[in-house]
Every structure is written in structure tokens, then in C-alpha cells.
Amino acid sequence: MRPFFLTETPNTFKLQFDYNPRMIDLVKRIPSHPKWDGTDRAWIVQKEDPFYPPNRDARWYVEALAQWAVNNRYCSEVKRREDAKDITYELPTLSGIDGDHYMLLDPYQYQLEGVQYALQHKRCIFGDQPGLGKTLQAICAVIKAHNEAAKYGETLPTLIICPASLKINWQREFKKFAGRNAIILDDNNRYNWHRFIEMKKPDGEPLCDIFITNYESLKKFFVTEIKEHAKLTMRSIVFDPRIKLFKSVIIDESHKCKSPKTQQSKFVEGICKGKQWVFELTGTPVVNNNTDLIQQLRILNRLDEFGGYRKFVSRYCDGPKMSSNMKELNWRLWNCCFFRREKKAVLTQLPDKSRQYIECDITNRKEYQDAENDVIKYLRTYKNADDDKVQRAMRGQIMVQMGILKQIAARGKIHAVADFVHDVIDGGEKLILFAYLKEVVDALKKEFPDAVTVTGSDNVREKQRAVDKFQNDPECKLIILNYKSGGTGLTLTASSRVAFIEFPWTYSDCEQAEDRAHRNGQKNNVNCYYFLGSKTIDRYMYKVIQTKKDIANEVTGTTTQIDEDIVNITMNLFQDRL
Image (cartoon, rainbow, N blue to C red; front, top):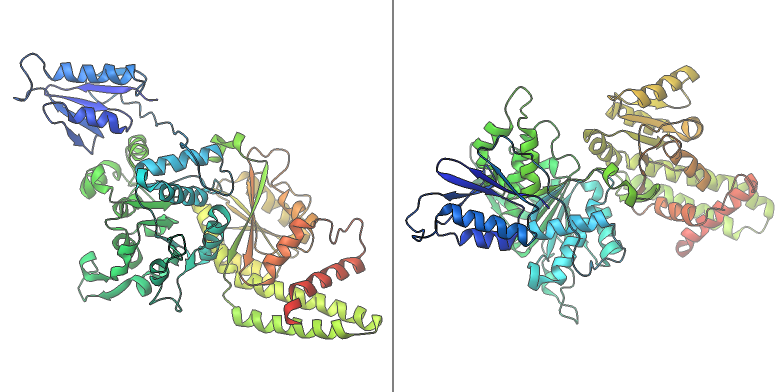
């Protein structure tokens, strides 16, 4: 609970307090008709005005309002000042939601506080540090508002705009958290996706009212014409009228819209125009300098609340770094349309180690499909073989071909993983990344030349230098390891994030790799991310490894038993096609 700040100038009173509809209603009843100053985030009450009654002046009204706010616990105290130089920029506290959250899984308390902020502000930025569940909070806010539309207003149908690599993950998260189906827009539904809204279930709900697309596809799905002009402007873009069907828009990784000059940022702005609900999700709202916020605020239709473009630039983008008055800007963002929590602030609510898988499409689908067909041919022969010796001989070949499937899937995930890595390190955090194939490691090293590596081609001294640099150099954000060289023995507690583009056959190997970060000296919750290729062997194998941790246990099982277990697993995976 913040104070009621009362600033007196020669001609006015400036009133500043936490947002509350009741308080605002009372301010507006002051006879002089106070004005909202978006630049100072204050209500301006004129001292001299003919509308004041003879026995009461401006001071009487503002003093009465301030005392009422304290007595009714809307504000902690009244703080007076003659000018604004002593503003403390105390950030508001967040509160939890009232009633049901409507999720299938219970969110953490800090996540419910983020949901409540979103419900109150409607057009805002979820700025939590990566790994704290911005996706869940956005889904929860949309669904709760939908279920309590009489109180909050309609939020469905909703459109999710995200990087291409995360479309499948958003679809899975809506099902996992809210039990609702979402449709990914593609060429098959390009012209008729709106029919899913028009067609109704027996309960009257639309057949589907959640749609997902990526930034690069916005033009194809939602722009009917771009008029020829010397300069691309909002007036030159003709949007598909169906965008009016969406009551809310969720923009994942909204910092991708930071430049007002790109087509995709203008497309996002046009789609969101006039929407009551717009949620931007980003752990890195400012990548370069404060100008990165301008287009994101414009998409939210919030830029005018900061005085417009010119005032924002002059006040907050000054100096050689184009970033000025940082504390004031942070305070104004929190009070207007932004919240952010860092992991260390909510550490007591988090488990020591958490895992999540990110399902993404692969870029080499044809190659994978051909290899999968080869595996199925071998499995058919193996299944029909009567001779145990033949089966044993074939078993090794099946293992080889299964390994080839995993390798192809890994190559197809490089683009999605690279996007993820960029987001983490752009946010100033470090990341431990495990791969297996040399060509995958080389491709990632080419994308991130400043990364250090621990692989079989590095000698002992090179490996130790890489570890020391990652642990001690703040500028070294990424270390890439393979399992054989970096899966055991190393201490990498400089990071609390471990990502896997490929993963081994056994749970124990996964756990050993995760524990490079999860060991003595680690002060944060450790987040482990497994990238799974959509419609590949990845998801099935991940599920088996995590749920049947005793399969292929290298301590109690022989190599032959491991091979038999994995071949049997593979038989189960493809049983419908044998």
C-alpha cells in the first residue's frame, strides 16, 4: 500500500496514488474538474476556479480526499511536498485474484498476482524474468476474464502471435493449463478459420475461439493489401476485416516488435488497434535502449499516457545511451501497464529444480519422414524373425537407425533453439546448452561465436578454460556441451538454466547433465528445458525417460538389456504401422 502524494505548486495541487476506480471517481467530483497529466502520472487540481462553492476551496477538497483515502486504507499515509524532486518511485505491490483461477493446475501465488494485474490493466506487458511462467499467467487472465465476462469484459476469441518455433508449444499449453483446444493457422484454414467461431457446440460455445500464428505469417493471414506509398504507414495497410472478431491479442516475445519501421510491428499494431485486451509477453522489453519501448507501448495504445512520442523520447531516451530517468520510467510503467518479477524475488515459491519441454516444428520434415519409414521396415522384419540370433543381430541395426532419427530431429530443431538462446542471453542471463552431434554443436557455435564449448574435440586445458570463463566472466553467456565430455563432473552454477537440443537414452544421463547447474553453490531455482521435435520420436522418448526412470539403468542393467528395452519401446511407438 503506497502513500497519497500531495504536491503543492503556486497554482495547483498534484495528486498521486495507486490506481483505484473509487479514488478516481472521487477526484472527478472535485468542482474544478481535475485533469489527468500523463507525463507526471498525477491528477492536477486547480487552486482557483469559479466552480468552487463559497465556503470550500481546492485545499479543502484535496485534504478531505487524502484523509478519506488513509482512513479507508486505500493509501498508507499522506506525504506532502512542495515540488516533485523528492519522489521516491516506490513500486506498487501486487495482490492475488478473487475467486477461481479456472486452471487445471494451481498457479503459484506470484503468478496469480500477475493475473490480477492483467485483469485490472487489460493492456499491459508481462515482463517477468524468463522461466517464471508468463504463458500460464496470460492464459489464466484470458480464461478467467472470459468466465467472468460480466465483471471484466469479453476476451474470447483470442489471437496468439508468437515466434514460429513456439506455435505448437502455445497450443499444448492452452490444453495443459486450461483444457481448451487452440488452432494453429495454416494454409488449410487460411480462408475459413472464422467458421470455427461461427460453429457452436451444444453448450453454445464456439467450436474453437483460440488461434495461433507467427510473426512472419501475419501478412498472409490478416493483410489483404499494402498500398503503394513511398513509406509504409498504417494508412497504407488494408487489414482483413476478420481481425475484428478477436477480442484479445497475446503477443509473445513482444520485443520482436520494438522497431516501428518493420512490417511485422505495423501489422501487430493494426491487429491490436481498438482491442480492449492486449497482453505483451517479454522477459527483455528493452534490448538496446529505452526507444525499444516506444512501439511496444504504441501497440498497447499506451504511448499517449507517457506524453506521446516526442515527450517520451525527450524524457526517457536522452544521453549517449538513449536511456534517461530510468527510475521514473520504471515507476510509471509499473503504475500504467507493466510488471516484472525476478526469480530471486519469488524463489521461496519455486521448486529447487523444474523441467518443461518445448515442442517445436522441425525444418527438415522430408528427411525425417524418409528415415522413419526405413526404421519401420526394419521393425517389420525384426518382428517377423523367428531366429533369436537374427533378432539379436538386427537389434543393433535398429538402435543405429533410431539414433539416426534422433540426429535428424536434432538438426531440424537448431533454428527453434537458436531463437530461445537469443531470448535468454539478450535478457542478460547465462545458459547451459547440451547437444550431442558435432554438426549441431558447430551450427550453434556459428550462430553464437562468443560461446564457449566443452566437447570431445577440446583438450583438458581448453575445457577448463571454457568452464572458468563461463563461471567467472559476466560477458560469457553461453556454454555448449556434449554429454560425454560435459555431462558429469563440471560445476556450472553461474547459470540456473539448462537446455537440451538432444537428450540421451537414460534418465540418469539427463539428471547428471541437469546437475551441472543444480549443485552446491546454486542460489536459484534451476529450469531445465527439453526441445522436442513435433511429430518425431522426441516426445515419446522424453515421456518414457521421465516416467520410467528405471529403463536402461546403466547401474543395474546390462547393455544387452538396454538395447532390448529401447527396441521394445520403439515397437510400441510404431505398432500401428507395423
